[in-house]
Length: 147
Image 1 (cartoon, helix red, strand yellow):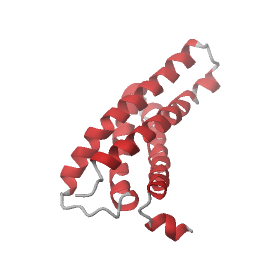
Image 2 (cartoon, rainbow, N blue to C red):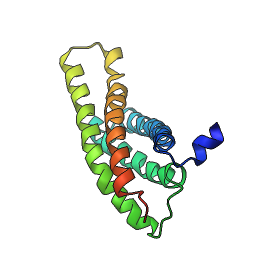
Image 3 (cartoon, rainbow, N blue to C red):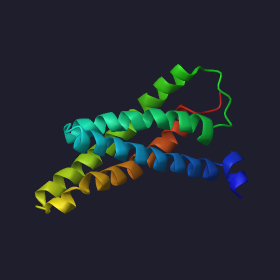
Image 4 (cartoon, helix red, strand yellow):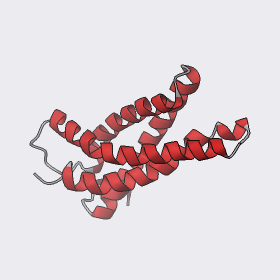
């Protein structure tokens, strides 16, 4: 079953691989955000922009070689990477907007400090799920399509 998932060209298997990559890059995004914000004391929103950019770069390579591996690519990596970032910028705006909304609403709710610590994680999760669904359908059509 695992072998079928890894090698299948079906839309369902491709989406499952995309979701696995999404989970992986969410962990990278979370680690980057908390490292930059809590470890380096960088602004929360700037930390998220940087951590998201790092996660998307890793996500491109994982998607190219794992999720959409069955598409022959005659284009080079740089062209695909630029297209990937252009497409994922829209999903990223959706992701970031939901992240910022969670932070804003959580701050207005007057949560105690131990709960506020978890708000960025919740924001990344909510924004990530919405962004992942959007980005899968657009990537499937515009970035990793049959040449």
